Amino acid sequence: QENRLRHHHHHHHHYHHHHNNNTGFIDHYFSFFFSLFQPFISDIFIRTLALVARVSFSAALTNSEWFSCPNQRGRPR
Image: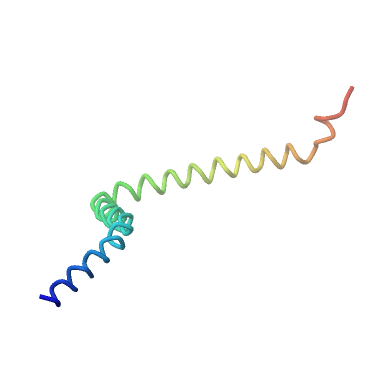
């Protein structure tokens, strides 16, 4: 009886840790979902990554062009 009571107390004490581990369950479910749709997701992810890299590269080029001549933009006529 005492051992069972102690086991119940340990289980009740362990419940808070299990409640905090809710994001682990979400990660596990998402990894399962990702493995299900991995061929589609990887293709979309690679295309999106290439698009983002292209856009950020052009934005960096535009920013470098804009920063190379700040005197022309801010010079009062």
